Length: 202
Image (cartoon, rainbow, N blue to C red; front, side, top):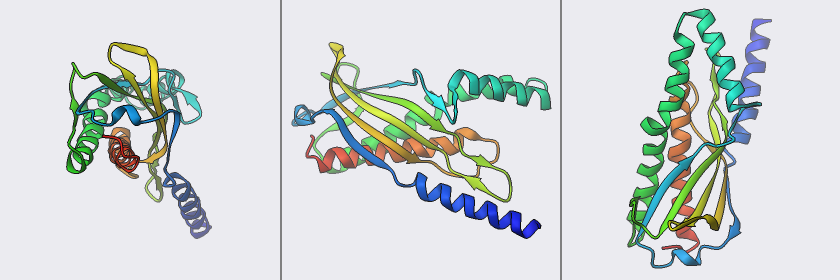
């Protein structure tokens, strides 16, 4: 019976990873002509109205906070704090690291943070799958996000929008959800840069 359960877990894991690694990127609004000749970008991040798995982010955090606090006093509070802090501490730097590297290597442009740049790239994460690790099996994190381009002087008018679906992170990492998710942002940065260059932006 134990061998059957293990086999089923492996089959589920393979099926899950087979779907999550099918990352898709496409332009859903506007075009990228405006980026031709652009040398600098301002980068911003948004997590508004994000879903986490089958929950809203608010419900997910409340659920995990309660579970962790029940197993160890204060653990859930620390976990929620880390969930939010991981954005600036791990996710955004990892996205920028790979995005900047691939743009700078192939184009005469500096895609690192420039507060006074004419155009702003807003990376809006609207879905996160945190993945899991339960010893005999694990599943990687994934994120869905939109790369939204606006004029810095007029952020309400979207010039172009690119949808990035199922950007894969890593599996495992024990209870450290942020470590799994971090790699999804690295992959998103790399693949977005490659997509822009392929479409002759910059």
